[in-house]
Image 1 (cartoon, rainbow, N blue to C red):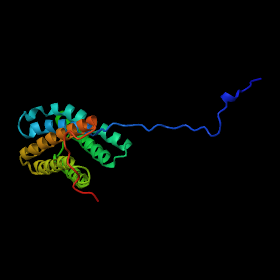
Image 2: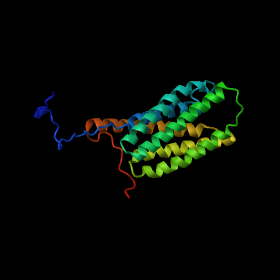
Image 3: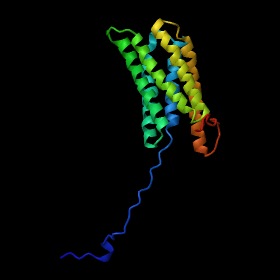
Length: 207
């Protein structure tokens, strides 16, 4: 016969408290991924490197532009940040599409019209404009990053539709890279210091 002592009995009023899980801000990771990919893409559009070496862009776009932003976006969902989750995840899918497009056009014999790529960019531009409006409620630096993204996409669309030079797009992508690096650094340093080291600027819009 088994006897249960009083100390082994779990009383009905016993409660288990679940400690909240603290998740670090993934924005610096996503912004650094965007900055690296934008810089690599800009180097070709600006003529800094040979366009014949486009295949070398694929790893940087795939791992930094796509995967880093995907990690940041999925983490933002866990943090209930709808802006960061939507923007990082959508831009990560854009980068995956760019990497796959580069692979198809370079390493396969599939017949294609690059204009199809332009219509994809038009769709991304629509989303990017929506994100830019939403960024008015975040901070000035995120708004600036998205403005440069908008301008880069706008410059790329006629390039793929009509063969216009991609140099302006390269300039705007370079601006995307610089502003993204600054914003990532500001968020990282400010979070670690617990105070403002580098300013991000207050939001333009507080509805």
